Image 1: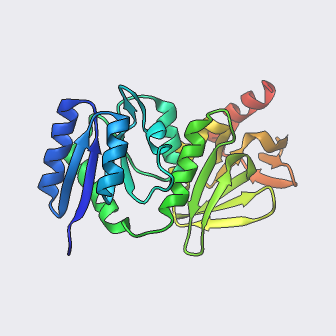
Image 2: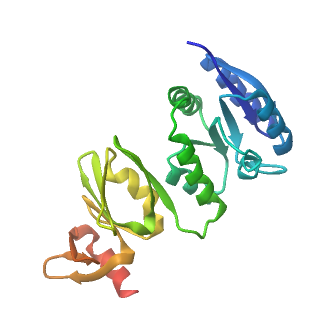
Length: 248
């Protein structure tokens, strides 16, 4: 198997040395160069054309997204690294792209490198990167989430999700349009991403968009969403949900 190539953009000397040592240890990767500034890195990357970057989100002369704006097309994969800015981390989660939260350990880097190695020729990456840039560039705009299954890659506004229902390790998303999207991931993996964006897990099998609550049927312990969707409410979550409704 031919080696893939890497360029590292990092302004912390210790972090640079650490990342470089792990990449060399992994093998099958040639480091073409490094840079600690946006402008210098852009020139080098355009010239050297690496397969992927290790890219720190926040540099002394700007951020990773200002750096990416310097490219007409992005033909390389990226492993983002960051040590702060939770809003940025949320953006990564919603785009289904990988990032390393500093300080990361060797296994986390190896896992990220393995994924880059496996996905180096996949075309869906550009769609995911576009979603990330949209989410990061305007934090007040509608959030989007990437839902991938065997048929397609769906980029969905969170406000268009009515509720999600789990079935073992599968989750079906029910959209306000009436469309349903089945993905092979557990509901729990989406709960973390969506809970800060007005979603609430009312039951082991259901995650709802609180925006669309129409009424609460106390007798049957059901929440009624717009479009007359009855959703069961677990006893353990009932009081918290009632408190939310009463504070509307």
